[in-house]
Length: 254
Image 1 (cartoon, rainbow, N blue to C red):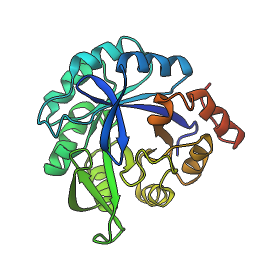
Image 2: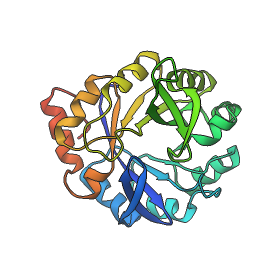
Image 3: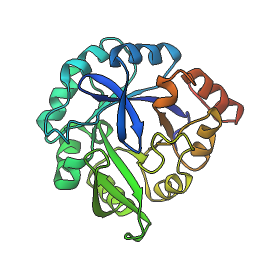
Image 4: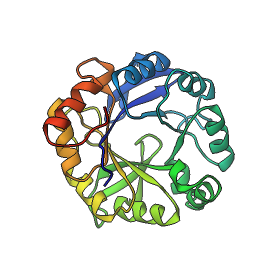
Protein backbone atom coordinates (compact mmCIF):
# COMPACT_ATOMS: atom_id res chain seq x y z
CA UNK A 1 0.00 0.00 0.00
CA UNK A 2 1.40 3.40 -0.97
CA UNK A 3 2.21 5.94 1.76
CA UNK A 4 -0.04 8.78 0.59
CA UNK A 5 -3.67 8.22 -0.29
CA UNK A 6 -4.64 9.50 -3.73
CA UNK A 7 -7.95 11.19 -4.47
CA UNK A 8 -8.93 10.81 -8.13
CA UNK A 9 -11.92 12.46 -9.82
CA UNK A 10 -13.21 10.43 -12.77
CA UNK A 11 -14.51 11.93 -15.99
CA UNK A 12 -16.81 9.44 -17.74
CA UNK A 13 -17.09 10.82 -21.26
CA UNK A 14 -19.46 10.09 -24.13
CA UNK A 15 -19.60 12.13 -27.35
CA UNK A 16 -17.20 14.68 -25.91
CA UNK A 17 -19.25 15.40 -22.75
CA UNK A 18 -18.94 14.17 -19.19
CA UNK A 19 -21.84 11.86 -18.32
CA UNK A 20 -23.06 10.08 -15.22
CA UNK A 21 -25.72 7.48 -14.52
CA UNK A 22 -26.60 4.78 -12.02
CA UNK A 23 -25.18 1.26 -12.50
CA UNK A 24 -23.84 2.53 -15.85
CA UNK A 25 -27.39 3.13 -17.13
CA UNK A 26 -29.44 6.25 -18.03
CA UNK A 27 -26.40 8.44 -18.66
CA UNK A 28 -26.98 12.18 -18.28
CA UNK A 29 -24.87 15.19 -19.13
CA UNK A 30 -22.56 16.41 -16.35
CA UNK A 31 -20.52 19.07 -18.13
CA UNK A 32 -17.50 19.87 -20.24
CA UNK A 33 -14.55 17.53 -19.57
CA UNK A 34 -11.86 20.15 -19.99
CA UNK A 35 -13.55 22.62 -17.64
CA UNK A 36 -14.19 19.94 -15.03
CA UNK A 37 -10.62 18.67 -15.27
CA UNK A 38 -9.33 22.16 -14.64
CA UNK A 39 -11.66 22.56 -11.64
CA UNK A 40 -10.43 19.34 -10.03
CA UNK A 41 -6.82 20.20 -10.70
CA UNK A 42 -7.31 23.50 -8.91
CA UNK A 43 -9.02 21.70 -6.01
CA UNK A 44 -5.92 19.57 -5.48
CA UNK A 45 -6.73 16.30 -7.22
CA UNK A 46 -3.78 13.90 -7.19
CA UNK A 47 -4.68 12.39 -10.54
CA UNK A 48 -7.51 12.39 -13.07
CA UNK A 49 -9.08 9.43 -14.80
CA UNK A 50 -10.75 9.93 -18.17
CA UNK A 51 -12.94 7.04 -19.37
CA UNK A 52 -14.63 7.09 -22.76
CA UNK A 53 -17.54 4.93 -21.62
CA UNK A 54 -19.06 4.30 -25.05
CA UNK A 55 -15.90 3.81 -27.13
CA UNK A 56 -15.95 0.01 -26.86
CA UNK A 57 -19.72 -0.22 -27.28
CA UNK A 58 -19.54 1.99 -30.38
CA UNK A 59 -16.44 0.11 -31.63
CA UNK A 60 -14.31 3.23 -32.02
CA UNK A 61 -11.20 4.79 -30.59
CA UNK A 62 -11.31 7.22 -27.68
CA UNK A 63 -11.61 10.95 -28.37
CA UNK A 64 -8.01 12.06 -28.72
CA UNK A 65 -8.73 15.76 -29.12
CA UNK A 66 -10.53 15.85 -25.77
CA UNK A 67 -7.61 14.02 -24.15
CA UNK A 68 -5.16 16.50 -25.66
CA UNK A 69 -7.19 19.51 -24.53
CA UNK A 70 -7.53 18.07 -21.03
CA UNK A 71 -3.81 17.36 -20.76
CA UNK A 72 -3.07 20.97 -21.69
CA UNK A 73 -5.14 22.21 -18.73
CA UNK A 74 -3.91 19.94 -15.92
CA UNK A 75 -0.46 19.09 -14.68
CA UNK A 76 -1.11 15.93 -12.69
CA UNK A 77 -1.13 12.31 -13.92
CA UNK A 78 -3.92 11.59 -16.39
CA UNK A 79 -5.18 8.05 -16.96
CA UNK A 80 -7.23 7.46 -20.11
CA UNK A 81 -9.29 4.40 -20.97
CA UNK A 82 -11.97 3.33 -23.38
CA UNK A 83 -11.55 1.72 -26.79
CA UNK A 84 -7.88 0.79 -26.28
CA UNK A 85 -7.22 -2.28 -28.42
CA UNK A 86 -3.54 -2.20 -29.35
CA UNK A 87 -0.12 -0.87 -28.40
CA UNK A 88 -0.54 1.69 -31.16
CA UNK A 89 -3.64 3.02 -29.39
CA UNK A 90 -1.54 3.35 -26.24
CA UNK A 91 1.23 5.15 -28.11
CA UNK A 92 -1.25 7.61 -29.56
CA UNK A 93 -2.83 8.30 -26.16
CA UNK A 94 0.55 8.86 -24.55
CA UNK A 95 1.40 11.18 -27.42
CA UNK A 96 -1.85 13.07 -26.80
CA UNK A 97 -0.93 13.73 -23.17
CA UNK A 98 -2.01 10.68 -21.20
CA UNK A 99 0.36 9.41 -18.50
CA UNK A 100 -1.31 6.05 -18.00
CA UNK A 101 -3.74 4.01 -20.06
CA UNK A 102 -6.62 1.86 -18.85
CA UNK A 103 -7.61 -1.37 -20.58
CA UNK A 104 -10.64 -3.53 -19.94
CA UNK A 105 -12.71 -5.22 -22.65
CA UNK A 106 -9.87 -5.65 -25.16
CA UNK A 107 -7.62 -7.24 -22.53
CA UNK A 108 -10.33 -9.73 -21.64
CA UNK A 109 -10.79 -10.59 -25.31
CA UNK A 110 -7.02 -10.96 -25.79
CA UNK A 111 -5.01 -11.15 -22.53
CA UNK A 112 -1.69 -10.98 -24.40
CA UNK A 113 -2.48 -7.29 -24.95
CA UNK A 114 -1.61 -6.68 -21.28
CA UNK A 115 1.85 -8.17 -21.73
CA UNK A 116 2.40 -6.34 -25.02
CA UNK A 117 1.61 -2.96 -23.45
CA UNK A 118 3.71 -3.64 -20.35
CA UNK A 119 6.66 -4.87 -22.41
CA UNK A 120 6.61 -1.86 -24.72
CA UNK A 121 5.79 0.96 -22.29
CA UNK A 122 6.36 -0.43 -18.78
CA UNK A 123 3.92 -1.69 -16.16
CA UNK A 124 3.65 1.80 -14.65
CA UNK A 125 1.71 2.91 -17.75
CA UNK A 126 -0.86 0.13 -17.62
CA UNK A 127 -4.01 0.28 -15.47
CA UNK A 128 -6.30 -2.74 -15.59
CA UNK A 129 -9.85 -1.43 -15.39
CA UNK A 130 -12.24 -3.91 -13.80
CA UNK A 131 -16.02 -3.41 -13.96
CA UNK A 132 -17.17 -5.95 -11.40
CA UNK A 133 -20.57 -7.32 -10.43
CA UNK A 134 -21.60 -9.65 -7.65
CA UNK A 135 -22.42 -13.12 -8.99
CA UNK A 136 -23.00 -16.54 -7.41
CA UNK A 137 -21.59 -18.11 -10.58
CA UNK A 138 -17.93 -17.49 -9.68
CA UNK A 139 -15.76 -18.80 -6.81
CA UNK A 140 -15.16 -15.32 -5.35
CA UNK A 141 -18.75 -14.18 -5.81
CA UNK A 142 -17.65 -11.43 -8.21
CA UNK A 143 -17.68 -11.52 -12.00
CA UNK A 144 -16.01 -9.26 -14.58
CA UNK A 145 -18.14 -7.36 -17.11
CA UNK A 146 -17.22 -5.66 -20.38
CA UNK A 147 -18.60 -2.96 -22.68
CA UNK A 148 -19.25 -0.47 -19.90
CA UNK A 149 -20.87 -3.04 -17.63
CA UNK A 150 -23.32 -4.17 -20.31
CA UNK A 151 -21.89 -7.64 -20.95
CA UNK A 152 -21.26 -10.18 -18.20
CA UNK A 153 -18.35 -12.59 -18.74
CA UNK A 154 -17.64 -15.95 -17.11
CA UNK A 155 -14.42 -14.60 -15.56
CA UNK A 156 -13.99 -14.59 -11.82
CA UNK A 157 -12.91 -11.04 -10.96
CA UNK A 158 -10.14 -12.06 -8.57
CA UNK A 159 -8.72 -14.72 -10.87
CA UNK A 160 -8.66 -12.29 -13.80
CA UNK A 161 -7.03 -9.54 -11.73
CA UNK A 162 -4.32 -11.94 -10.56
CA UNK A 163 -3.62 -13.14 -14.08
CA UNK A 164 -3.44 -9.59 -15.43
CA UNK A 165 -0.93 -8.62 -12.73
CA UNK A 166 1.24 -11.58 -13.76
CA UNK A 167 1.02 -10.39 -17.37
CA UNK A 168 2.20 -6.89 -16.40
CA UNK A 169 -0.68 -4.72 -15.17
CA UNK A 170 0.77 -2.04 -12.91
CA UNK A 171 -2.43 -0.94 -11.16
CA UNK A 172 -6.01 -2.13 -10.63
CA UNK A 173 -8.97 0.21 -11.06
CA UNK A 174 -11.75 -1.74 -9.35
CA UNK A 175 -15.22 -0.39 -10.09
CA UNK A 176 -18.28 -1.94 -8.50
CA UNK A 177 -21.09 -1.91 -11.06
CA UNK A 178 -23.55 -2.68 -8.26
CA UNK A 179 -22.51 0.41 -6.31
CA UNK A 180 -21.78 2.70 -9.26
CA UNK A 181 -23.74 5.95 -9.03
CA UNK A 182 -25.82 4.76 -6.07
CA UNK A 183 -23.98 6.96 -3.52
CA UNK A 184 -24.44 4.13 -0.99
CA UNK A 185 -20.71 3.74 -0.29
CA UNK A 186 -17.88 1.66 -1.74
CA UNK A 187 -18.09 -2.13 -1.86
CA UNK A 188 -15.70 -2.80 1.03
CA UNK A 189 -15.76 -6.57 0.64
CA UNK A 190 -14.67 -6.28 -2.99
CA UNK A 191 -11.83 -3.92 -2.02
CA UNK A 192 -10.65 -6.27 0.73
CA UNK A 193 -10.61 -9.25 -1.62
CA UNK A 194 -8.71 -7.36 -4.32
CA UNK A 195 -6.18 -6.09 -1.78
CA UNK A 196 -5.55 -9.64 -0.59
CA UNK A 197 -4.54 -10.89 -4.04
CA UNK A 198 -2.91 -7.75 -5.47
CA UNK A 199 0.78 -6.90 -5.45
CA UNK A 200 0.06 -3.60 -7.23
CA UNK A 201 -1.90 -0.49 -6.15
CA UNK A 202 -5.69 -0.78 -5.95
CA UNK A 203 -8.01 2.12 -6.84
CA UNK A 204 -11.49 1.86 -5.35
CA UNK A 205 -14.36 3.09 -7.52
CA UNK A 206 -18.14 3.06 -7.40
CA UNK A 207 -20.54 4.18 -4.71
CA UNK A 208 -19.10 7.32 -3.11
CA UNK A 209 -21.92 9.45 -1.79
CA UNK A 210 -20.68 11.18 1.37
CA UNK A 211 -17.38 12.48 2.66
CA UNK A 212 -17.39 9.68 5.24
CA UNK A 213 -17.41 6.96 2.55
CA UNK A 214 -13.78 7.40 1.53
CA UNK A 215 -11.79 6.51 4.67
CA UNK A 216 -13.44 3.06 5.01
CA UNK A 217 -12.36 2.26 1.44
CA UNK A 218 -8.75 3.07 2.32
CA UNK A 219 -9.04 1.08 5.55
CA UNK A 220 -10.31 -1.86 3.49
CA UNK A 221 -7.11 -1.80 1.45
CA UNK A 222 -7.41 0.74 -1.35
CA UNK A 223 -4.39 2.89 -2.23
CA UNK A 224 -6.59 5.47 -3.94
CA UNK A 225 -10.24 6.48 -4.05
CA UNK A 226 -12.02 7.50 -7.23
CA UNK A 227 -15.36 9.27 -7.54
CA UNK A 228 -17.38 11.08 -10.15
CA UNK A 229 -20.93 12.25 -9.46
CA UNK A 230 -20.29 13.71 -6.00
CA UNK A 231 -17.58 15.90 -7.52
CA UNK A 232 -19.47 16.79 -10.71
CA UNK A 233 -22.53 17.89 -8.74
CA UNK A 234 -20.47 20.01 -6.37
CA UNK A 235 -21.71 18.05 -3.35
CA UNK A 236 -18.09 17.44 -2.40
CA UNK A 237 -14.73 18.88 -3.40
CA UNK A 238 -11.41 17.10 -3.53
CA UNK A 239 -10.38 19.22 -0.55
CA UNK A 240 -13.38 18.00 1.47
CA UNK A 241 -12.34 14.39 0.90
CA UNK A 242 -8.69 15.02 1.74
CA UNK A 243 -9.59 16.78 4.97
CA UNK A 244 -11.79 13.87 6.03
CA UNK A 245 -9.06 11.35 5.20
CA UNK A 246 -6.53 13.37 7.19
CA UNK A 247 -8.92 13.49 10.16
CA UNK A 248 -9.10 9.70 9.94
CA UNK A 249 -5.32 9.57 10.34
CA UNK A 250 -4.49 8.88 6.70
CA UNK A 251 -1.69 10.64 4.88
CA UNK A 252 -2.79 12.78 1.94
CA UNK A 253 -0.86 14.93 -0.47
CA UNK A 254 -1.26 18.64 0.12
